[in-house]
Amino acid sequence: MPDEKLARALRARIRRMILREIIKSGKLSVREIARRLNITDYSASRHLRLLYDLGIVDFESKHPEKYYYVKLKYLKELLDAYDRVVKELEVNK
Image (cartoon, rainbow, N blue to C red; front, side, top):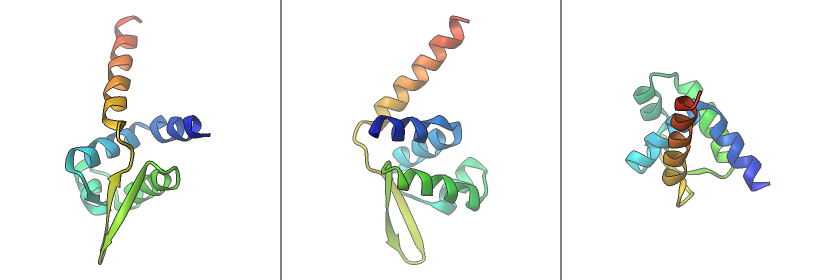
């Protein structure tokens, strides 16, 4: 189900961070994402693979790299709303 796929994709904070970096830049390689977020290439690759399998991101191959981009038109707005809701929950503790 699409809603479960999206929930799984956004569940992990690091995946939300990866998506924000891709949205900000348009397209990024695994190496660029790993460097920007101070994680290993392996970790970035694992998360990107999950996001790819869920249909959230896609990639273009430019040998020797794959450049990932977000496929969903409104994902930035969704991530911004998610952050606002989290902040509201923190304030209302």
